[in-house]
Length: 411
Image (tube, rainbow, N blue to C red; front, side, top):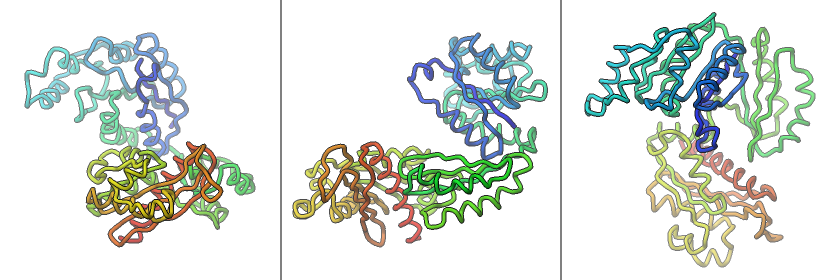
């Protein structure tokens, strides 16, 4: 199945908000075995929406549209889709009943604007939205599908797995696309590509290898299409043999922060972080996972030595003797934030992000990462690169990786 994702909204084109819906939908489609061939954003204007939908329907089996379903006059997606599919907007009693349930606690809030959400194109199948007032819509035309979803990310993230995926599996039951992923740590993309050059040359028709680099790691995606899907596992075993001697793990659809979240939820445990050189980036990664409030208690960005001492309890004599970028300081930072928050787990970073501040003994890129848990605390030294952004990114990823490793060893 080939898919196109179309996002609608002036705020996206103006750079005022980030389009996370396309990323979410594309990932869900990939897990299903579908191939997203294009992502596109258009303005909240009739002609732009019409043209975008028409182009998408020409090139794909399924089109996924997000945005423009609100109750205000600038949201015109429903009207355009009604015209495109040769129908008209009509009052839908079922959808109105859903709205009455949503506003049952405050019926006065079901005003004239909100009531317009019950007017949908006649030929669409309404998709019930338990997270908001805008129903999703399912259209079919000429054997193809168009799905219209709200622009609010958490509403789309509810509707897609709950209402859309089951229908897609029924409609497109033989997608013929599979992939497996592996994350390789601590090797630049170019070096990894040289190591895998002969492996790539040996790939059968219909099988391809893609490189997805990030600071600190490279994700490899091995994809099989059509008749080659039966050969994917054999080629993946060969890939693992080629990676022998490197630090790697199979990526089962979860990021490190998502896996940490899953383990913390299952164990009923919590985590906190104390950051110096990463400046809050670890906290950002942890809280990027929905529901992080259930297990993330907080963090301290302790850039100065005074904050390290007064807030985290790092000993002044250790700062003077070993310096801020040292094993004792990293350990005490992790222990300190664990103590003041009451978390079962804590992670810390202290280092020289650059571009200035390095010395022969502690060059730019030197980072100590600490992890504290129920059975004690430890720290490990790394020397990354000369680029500030890469150092922050790689230190953050490595910190989460070390945290996950300690959680696995202590379960």
